[in-house]
Image (cartoon, rainbow, N blue to C red; front, side):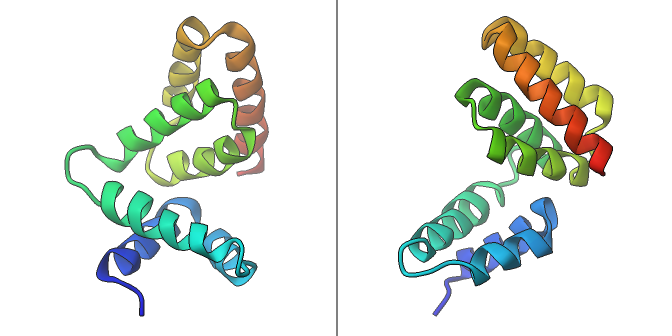
Length: 123
């Protein structure tokens, strides 16, 4: 039985990264990957993203910066969609990625900016 935090996380996750993506992630999960899907949905989305301390827009910009620092292009693509869904403008995304050039390195910022350009063109 899904917990209340899981259900809340599922709702937020779908609102941010898209219902189709989330439904596919859960549908394609197996005995190896389902525990991680449940953990991410309940704790990441249900316990952290549901908090009132930061607006979703700010959380999205933070994610873009952290994912750039960690060199996680797949997750960056997903969270670029989330940033747009959460009301971030193209200019705000560019500014956040520009900031990463100073603190994470120019190569990281170049890679993330290239990915952002692709994702924004697709949207």
